[in-house]
Image 1 (cartoon, helix red, strand yellow):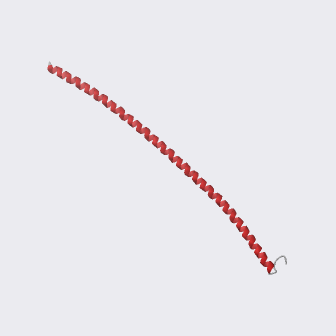
Image 2 (cartoon, rainbow, N blue to C red):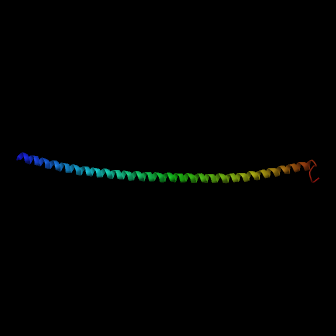
Image 3 (cartoon, helix red, strand yellow):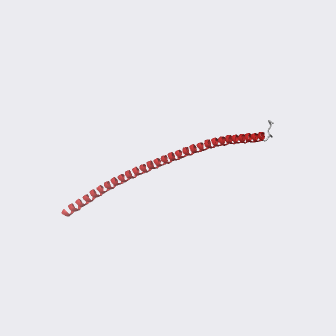
Length: 111
């Protein structure tokens, strides 16, 4: 009879151990899922932040490039106007010099 009691007690302890092991495995599984979920959320957040930062850098670069282009076009327009004005002044000075030389040597219109 003692042998049946020991056998019965051993079976009961074995079942209790199995129940506790199953509960522990379920707890570990839930904890692992929670960690996985949090890691996934963190990765998505990091990805979103990276995309936002990249877009901001791209927008800033485009804006800087447009500003540089606008400045270059404005400078070109100013240079063109300056060079044209200078050319006209040089042409007028040359015409004036030619007229003065002609007048000096007696070939001018105002003889």
